[in-house]
Amino acid sequence: MLSRALALTFLGFSLASLQAAEPEVRIEKNIPYLPADRKEKADLYLPPTNEQKHPGVVIIHGGGWTSGIKDAAREINIGTTLASHGYVCMSIDYLLHDSKSEQPCWPQNLHDCKTAVRWLRANAERLHLDPDHIGVIGGSAGGHLASMVGVTQAKDGLDPAGPYGEFSCAVNCVVDMYGPVDVAAWKDVSALRTTRAANPALYKQFTVSTYLDKNDPPFLILHGTADKTVDVSQSVAFDKVLTEHGIEHHLEIIPDAPHTFHLQPKQKDLRPLVLAFFDKHLKPAAK
Image 1 (cartoon, rainbow, N blue to C red):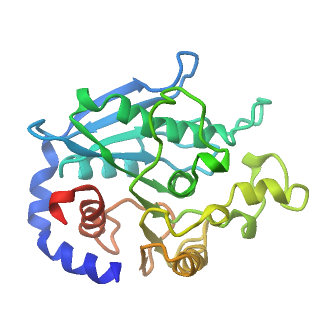
Image 2: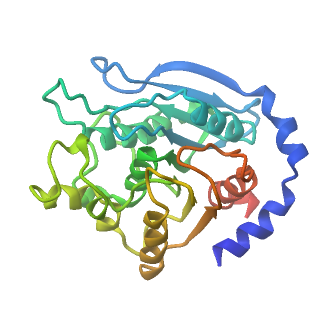
């Protein structure tokens, strides 16, 4: 079981070593990764040294697909934690729903997330990145988009034509932090500009489980029992459907944790678990 493997693996992480490693991360702010007419940018969190190729992780913020920023506290916590342990991290802004604009945010928001994966591969040499080992992590709406990056393929019609269309937007693993993955069974979403009753096909397209198959990458799911925004039942149901499809995964339920926490909520330090998961799937030498 993945849960047993992770439990055994993160025994090697001490809190002292985690805390000692944090300070030396290099940060590059407001990197353009989308076409020149787009305002959304990315922040890079880079390991202290470039002595070897590093795996990459795209970080996707939450905010109900209508708000949120790439350098909020959660995203900084994730970026600095992972970069200090040898990951090239890219925290992105992406197209948000704007009620004053006629442009829908879906599926452009997913296209932006997939473009970030391609951008990492296109810039692998400069970043000392291993383009064959890239993961994705996101919280809340970012957890939904991270999951969609993991499970959708070109055949689903949700890969962007460009930019960087010569590069793959596939990822090796996904960390979903309390994301509303089954939107079709959740509630009406303002970002979709319609209701479930009026357009069930759109809600199905926006739902992660629509695309699942046995070849999907491994998942780590994190969710708190005190979540009042996305009920923990979303992740419990996701755990069940992943099992039914034979997809490797682990569900970590954090008692009393609310909606929107980073890797160090007061209820439990999640850094050992998340680092063990990424190391298992993105660092071949560590297997």
